[in-house]
Length: 347
Image (cartoon, rainbow, N blue to C red):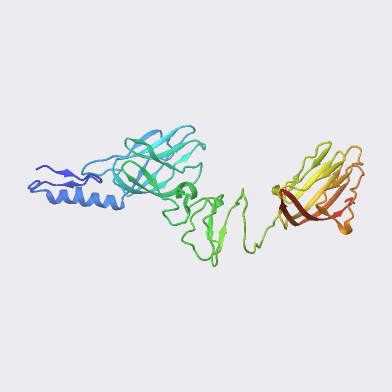
């Protein structure tokens, strides 16, 4: 009876009475050695500095060494703009630890890991122009899947791929994220723009060693302390038309600057937040001066006296404000914005 081979990792099953003088060598080489590969082999796929194109099919050999049997894969090479490359696994269930060193020449180059004959169910590898990434994948022979936040117990109802959202702990020095004291088991190597999974509860102290940009509303429920460096809010330039009733959009910043080129009225600001504070620079017309600025009733001044802005050419007044209250009732918005004027700044 001839030997057969297992379906998934292709180790030899000798038939009854077969190989009477060599069965021990075959057992060692075609079974035990190959099981060792399946548990711990590390195989490099691709060549550093060489382009990956079309399909790179992992080798599969019955009863002898191959690539697909390995436990860990290191991917090397690069993908180019507007082209996709595939790492092709056999159509058998298995899991892999993957160390990705594939880079892309632009953001449109893609790399997928797929099963033979199942090109629509692949796993997209997070490639970048620099850096590396390590991740785990599992395949049922048809679909290739990575870890997700739900499976790791992050409590996120949206299945979020761990590879594509956070990469790995080993990142470039400019994007290092460390935990200065207690290491939170849920704190992974977050991208510099996505720190939603950082545990900020006591006693965790998380240090982000890069510039993080928040593009939406961010709320801090405790003390915010700046131990070094500075905190500032840039000036937001407000366009004022020749004949204008205009408003400040408080969601764009805290500090504003505008030039009055015609008699104008500053109406109630948009997107007010109680407690918001800042300054407003008012620059007089640079041609002839003499322009006026009126204020909506929402602005409150000392003793109820509304200041007259300085009228000399290109003069600068500074208005300090603080939003005391804000309410909407029956579609009518009312606000109290305390304001103080420091006029005709010069030397």
